[in-house]
Length: 159
Image 1 (cartoon, rainbow, N blue to C red):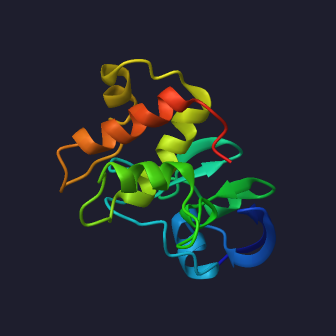
Image 2 (tube, one colour; image 1 turned 135 degrees about the vertical axis):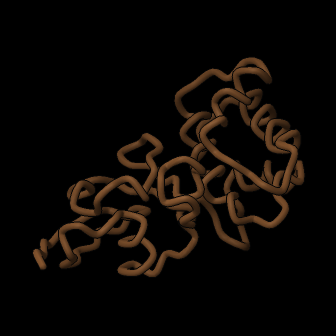
């Protein structure tokens, strides 16, 4: 077994761990850091449940080795808000009832955070296309689209 020591910044906090070189980023975040908000669904990069933000862009943590995150700024759902003070995307989801069981929600929140930061999303068609990489088995997506539409109209910094 080959081990490597990596240092990453997670939600603004520097962390160093010695890990197995082939450990997935999703497992690193959940098992080594104890941040269990990042969910693992399909383990093939298809469902989007494991989406995190790496150096400002969304990425599938189930397709990324943790060693690839050396020196990278990682944002997880835990950095988006708290029970007492939801982040803007979380609040839009709450207001528009954009979740049901909640399993896919962290991945959606992280993907939407990236989308709002980098893309205009001027029509519902653009919103639906942009969200096509995230799968929800419970909702009809309409409330999620409504939440994103509100955020796109506001168009301001998410933090």
